[in-house]
Image 1 (cartoon, rainbow, N blue to C red):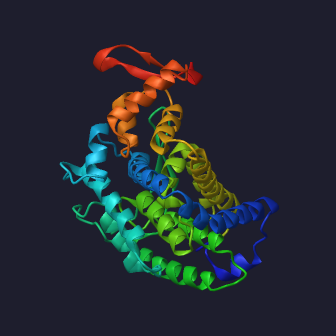
Image 2: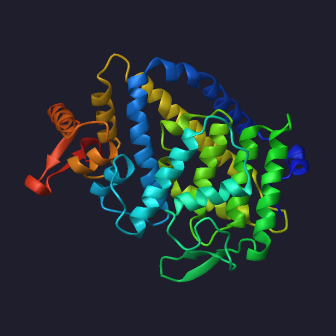
Image 3: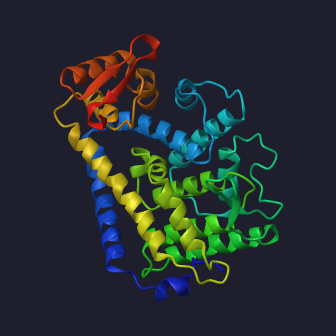
Length: 349
């Protein structure tokens, strides 16, 4: 049933495209220490921006949203959650803090996975940190409102044993020189999603588990670039590939290579963005340049306040100044006046 099986992975054929992505990601990991040492001021800005985007995107994928002006106080500040969505936002932030605060690798165990779930759920739901007690289904809602079962995960009674086996198989795979760690990580995440061990919060825990395992193998890019944002931007691909690669999972006949390629593309894209942002900061006011890039990356009209939420390291005065300069150069335009005024990139016009 589990895709993460040492014998199966050893026998797997790695296509040229997958091999190229593996090599590119490993090369980027080799360069990251040099990038990190070069621009500490830029890294501080990127860290704050990444944690806000990660918390917001991961929960938004699950349909959890809160008012934009509450994101920064909950994630960067000390605001207390006032309702269930805010508890989940704050919980994901605490889970990321736990992952990045660890001084040494933590072996993946059932206890670690339950801990991530308890943190991500905000700690207040009745089954936070507990395996599902009933069988669940992954349901797709069609455009006409019809609900269709896309996948039936592992039964509740099988879940503890399957997670235990998954942890053991992952540790075994990581000890094999013939199995690239990135393929072990991506396969582990796929199996986790197919087991679907919790009543709620499986997607959030899968993304946290991805972060945890990547950090343990030295891939630090998630500290500075939100991989959750990249997943959200390609959400259709994520769900399509998950559906394709879960077919035949119960019988051990599912495809895994398309999932490997997707996983590696997201990681490679994160490293590419990380390098571009550091290079773009060379010889320029760091915050001003990053605010400009963030403004140009907006899709559709946006307000100054919305940009401030996404970029907490910059003051509203600086953001206003940068937008004013961009207006003069014709990069953005202001539509409307007063409270209803919105900015828009002229590239979208």
